[in-house]
Length: 352
Picture 1 (cartoon, rainbow, N blue to C red):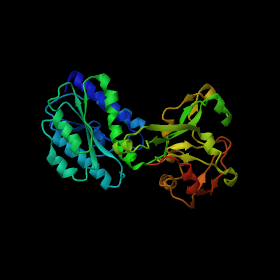
Picture 2 (spheres, rainbow, N blue to C red):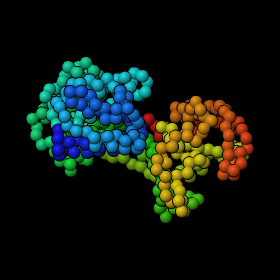
Picture 3 (tube, helix red, strand yellow):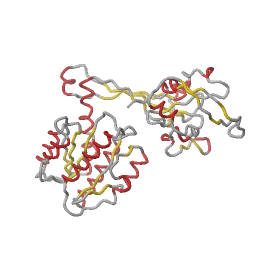
Picture 4 (spheres, rainbow, N blue to C red):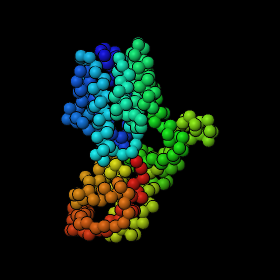
């Protein structure tokens, strides 16, 4: 795989990364006669698909080059073992698992490997991407996809990459369409401006913290449902200030404050979250949407509060914290607040 094929392969992998979010975990393995993890420091594990990790892996994609003979059986064995170990150790969840195979050919169907690691349950879907115009190996790759509940795609030019990469999402959505699972998803906090007719909802003008709630749209026709066709997604933007209005502030106390996090532990809103800086506070800080709760609640050393919120536990517990007042000029000393995981979890809208 050299020249244009290698360029297309890199762009294909990069486009696949674009489809992943904070709820996903991934790794990239290059192979010839031996295995080469794209990031050598992350051998044998999966990492969260946040912005920082994806950008880091993209930098390493440029270092890939063609050498030797591609031993696909070695790569498939490693990929299956990696997914299995990740789940058996409790780091994964019962969700969709997939292997994206980006290659310019496969000399065999490797059914022995699939029989050992993936059959009969077929929990891991295989999505082969054949790079190049030649179709000599297309039948083998098509068989792999069909035998493992995946989808085969051939990418001939750079212009084909984006559209063809998105095909796998339609396949992964089929079970949810057939079962009519109306999952509600909340995004991380982002900076945006409200429309003029909606600005009356906000106390301030200009860019504000927003979140988006979305859910899938299904067809009521039996034919569409049986084929698992997702019609689309409907969503609406919600200013974070509107969520804060639902919090009973009179129950918080004189030094009390409320905050909310996503299901990944990232802050949706917090008194110490300051996403904007510069003149007029209109410039956003990089990675402001991936600030973990443990970075601002320093006294939560064992992540007791953070983990309780992420796991949606209810009830109350107490811990000692220090709270600065007057913008950090004065410290009132140790406080003993009663923290309710129930109220906090209700403001943690994203789900797995």
